[in-house]
Length: 151
Image 1 (cartoon, rainbow, N blue to C red):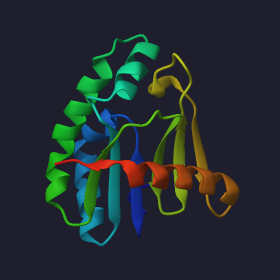
Image 2 (image 1 turned 90 degrees about the horizontal axis):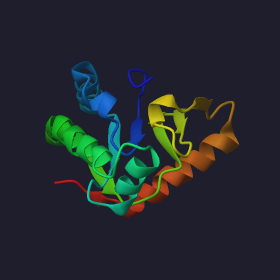
Image 3 (image 1 turned 180 degrees about the horizontal axis):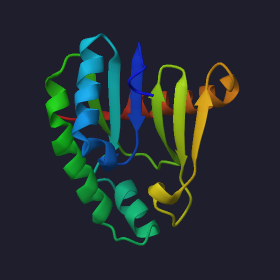
């Protein structure tokens, strides 16, 4: 999905560690940015109470997700040197994680007490699901607007 993006890629999650650990994905995101695709990555602030709460709700402890975010930030760090890539930290309660490539979205629907990897993922396209994609896009934009740049 990200490989086919021609204008925008957005990632909104708490850590997306599984993506950050994939060196091929880091290379792909850098490559897409170099062709003019705008890349925005939104991760949970590891020091925020929302990140700690999510870990408690998943039954893994308050510090585990924060550690995952810190690990992901270190792995995403090379992308900060690439023009067109922005990384921000948010302090929001996420009801879902969103992975967007142009008009395509993968929405990982969070369920209380369930790790994200075990929760359903919806595939939406603006062409077929215009109202649904607009809701998720608006949510992403609201979080982006209040998130702080990662330095």
